[in-house]
Image (cartoon, rainbow, N blue to C red; front, side, top):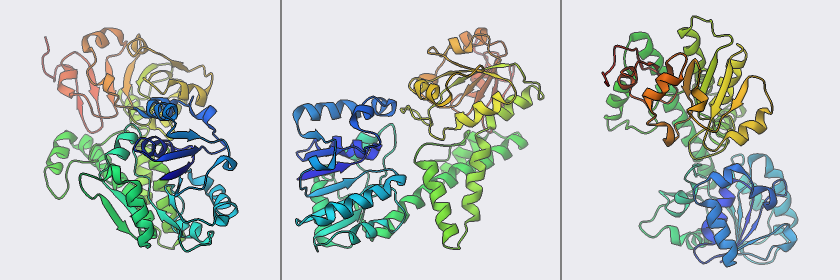
Length: 434
């Protein structure tokens, strides 16, 4: 098939890479706001595992061609929209002014998170019976997007047109061989389902964070509670991890969008508002634990932070919990040293020069003379640090674990004070590691 992919989002880049790998001739037109000359230098694209290499390989093989304007696009069998939510008017204009005037049959795939019902609106801008718009919600996760596209757990296809469904099944046949992973539903149902999944995941995380607060108050280790809940087959272990808040360019934004849909339909969701509020509060969890440990006397302290990206395996800091944490520390005149394997350039662009911010390219150097170490992002390189070395580097042996990845007793056994989210241990109460 001839496929045109339009957009500069992760969904567009991943679709362009994957579809051009399996025999389709793909023409990728990035959005003019972020052309290929900028996109190829972006931190998030270069840090996404395998994606940049696959794109370059397919460009060299000429199965993927880059286009700098709509004038260079061919008449295609499939037009794939991978645009950001605020670019939907650009999509409308392109479809109405260009695709709506085409005379051939094609399917328009809306892989963007536009308002519910927008896929139908796109189809109204086209003219022929076999010019059909379908919804294929973007379910990719940063840090493993290419693998998820090429080995999907499911494709959630919103379509009421059998001919369009057959075209999409053929388009994605190479990624649907082991078992049929298509879930077919009406377009609006698919669009709402994507947002509903985000809402449910966020609710589970926020609930666990509320339980972590109770556990702290009661002197209970929340990890035991989590294990007990996850063992119940009606609940399971997924997304039951308490922590210092969630973020990201899609997750948080889509949660807000789902909440606004309720407001606009006069069905305001008190639950979603509470989920959002809990997450906002949790982004300052480590700050509050530092405050409590020092009885509010934290001015002029120095804190090391490991991790700035909103999740591992990405360079993005969009709505990352670390931003709210850093700003809360700065408000108390705390100097912050940050290490992250990929996101330091993003943090530097976001804040520029700041007298209370030091970006460090060595994780242990960030801890030299610091009064606490805060773990904000659970990169694999942070999971098994040299605790003896940290105990000598830190001026105050305090570990604040915002992702609960460490064993409290083991950390305390090295003479360090451990505070997690619903977990804690003090020196002398842990496992003797000597």
